[in-house]
Image (cartoon, rainbow, N blue to C red):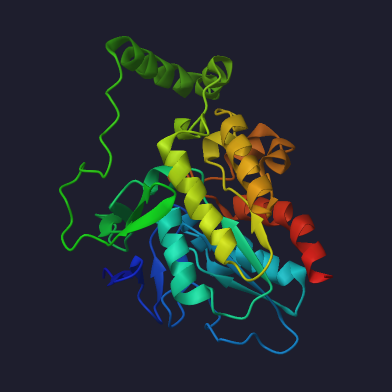
Length: 331
């Protein structure tokens, strides 16, 4: 029987159904989720004061952070909590399908006033595109319709100020976005894509190789510091850091194609590096740890159909974050 995972929310657009406990079908065999009363997939309730003697970390991100596809205890946030020590509490505010805009609103709604010691921001690099949308897709428990569309708020940039546009009361038709769609590929480019895809079926890794040779970066909006989409993303994240009441660690989550070496990460790492330097927060590049793994291992860090991380991917995220988070526990 299909169970609703999400409900509408006037601030963030939607949230998990508070107190929900269920199993969600997935290509990885399904996964259990447990939600707190605030509507986040977190086993801890949001108490204003942290428990005595506890070091509390707030983690914000999208479905990669929420752990779509894996059980709660296998997510990188839960792994960090266990490996950092018994006195560490990690509050997971990951929201599947969300943009960085919704993550900022969730912080303002639920996280900013909570007593905490560290803020961990994990924007998935494609969130730069979601920030332009007023509708997004979230997981569903219906195997015949594994995703459903939900409304989301968004910001536009008016000068240097963020202007909030609330979630639409009614969903626009599929394909309608806040920004004009990208032009379709030319006939030659489309043909090359189809040929490359066919060759890749016979020679795994060929597609990634051709993109490396061509120096493809994605999302292309990171290519220039003046790109409007990046300016919006930068302002949202800078506001996040400015409103934080604790040290901030910024750890962008790469796509599976970045992890497997098919896409260059130079552009997004440069943009996030500039932001971290200006905002005064620490930047963590999670890619080197993946690149130290054989290609066969990296390919098992995502699901075959769902590009989000498998338990192995989450384990590597946690391993990459641990040495950057431990020093804050000693401060």
